[in-house]
Length: 410
Image 1 (spheres, one colour):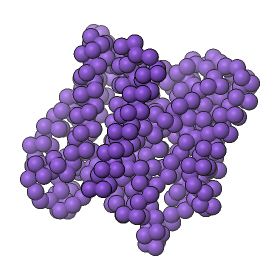
Image 2 (image 1 turned 180 degrees about the vertical axis):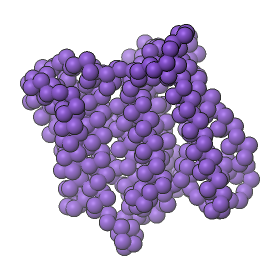
Image 3 (image 1 turned 45 degrees about the vertical axis):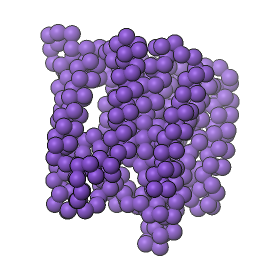
Image 4 (image 1 turned 30 degrees about the vertical axis):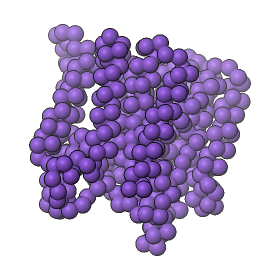
């Protein structure tokens, strides 16, 4: 964790993501230079998607594959939101995969063996995730045990507990209602005159327009406070591109059963965490802790309590990710969650989170998760083996961390 205090970041535009608020000055070229990494992440995502779209003969962006891409990476995006706060606060959580697998096992036992209704079982599993996060966060926050050690122990403990609870066997299937958490689609309320689902189309357009409206309002607020904003031409182009991309993907997905339920859950969570990190006191305090924990403590921030709460939050989101994954597989397996922590942590670092703490963005974590997901999906379509997939993902992660170290030294 770095001793250099880094201020929390606010959203300056729909493409650039969260940007530091500094007095407005400099040319367009200076703005691009200052925020090259923000634009670079998006350009990297588009370049990767374009590459796999070409080499797979257009398979990547087909409606069915786009829907599968959302379903396959939903739990990674959900857990990445919690991991972002953990990393920003200067810690790490290696147990999220094992916790997700363990909670999935508990949900299977409750619903399959004890025939508990899915609502009660889901609530109990989310509470269990919070308790697990609290147990680990307590040792980290109040006993100052390094998070690496505590969560490494948690990874082993919950992996073993999941194996013991399932007795080495898969448990399932779940009820059709619970399966809809991951594999269901939003209901259609309007007549369907063609092959597209109009409710999904309208909802997607509203989401795109809402994001552009929030970006415009936030830009005006920053201008009133004399903060650096995206140049007008860039802002107009980025807003139009954002709206166009959202409408395009909505049009594609709406031709295949409509918007998945889990996508709506993801959008709601992304909006909530973007607001918390960018517009609330607790979000700014978490950034302050990661930037300089001693200075944050001297300024009156209750660093122990906030660290504790970030791990409670991580536990709840890991539980939700485990439920989504179990619902997608329609079964709980002893190996569920294996390697999830690597993809989640990689998504945050690729998305711009700093290994030193104090720096990171919700938009960046989502983009990082999408980069990982597109790479996994594209390489699978191409028939590349899991061995080389791991090699390429490791190199991408190493490159992202090298960029972070370079920025810190600069």
